[in-house]
Length: 67
Image (cartoon, rainbow, N blue to C red; front, side, top):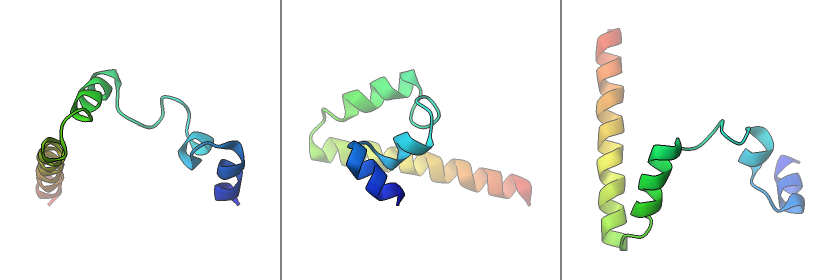
């Protein structure tokens, strides 16, 4: 149902559920992501790998601290 509504309105389901600033990067990260989107595919893959590595490291630290 939600998908059909989003298609009919030509919007994403996120825009139906979340507020404008509720989901997505803050302004600083948005600028960085915009710049990264201009990189070639290899550069984009590198940026993605670095970000994923940082996120995994952060999650593992939180998990270790909780134990």
